[in-house]
Image (tube, rainbow over all chains, first blue to last red; front, side, top):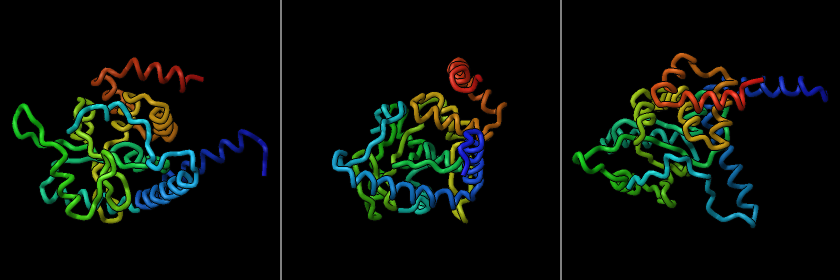
Length: 65
Length: 173
């Protein structure tokens, strides 16, 4: 283990490049796992509402009904 | 919980004539080009069929179709295979173009229609929230954008000045 910041940043970049280059199907499976994990963490927090919401992007302000 | 099932369901819905063209946007769309980033929902952009010049068909046919196949509503989302999915009309010129120019990417034998990386980046720039800026930086740092194509989109949609500000804030050493 190194505390060289440049090394750490390069290592992070390399890991992100590796993740980006994975097959799409595998990356989508990872999204499934990430969401399950996020929901489990949120469910364990009593301070949060049961419904998980994100700040909507501007295009959602359009009345689409 | 499986995004692949979401894509299969939407493809079936398209084949059954409920929607015309569709494209995946947002964080799920970006994952086709970048590393996966946790997200809570799936954004599906679609061109809603016009009944007349004055009115657009609403979301009801989509919801009716999906509810009949066991999907449930959750606020403005419909839950498909455990994922909240939001159907969004491509109502701005940028979104209309992004939908028109969307590409088909194979997901282990399942075709998925997705915005191009350049359109996803331009939409992120236009939206301008912190998470959109972070996503745009990811696109730039990953070298996922065709610079010429990206610049032409920015020029067509009056985003050159916004891009210059972004460049100055985040990409100038």
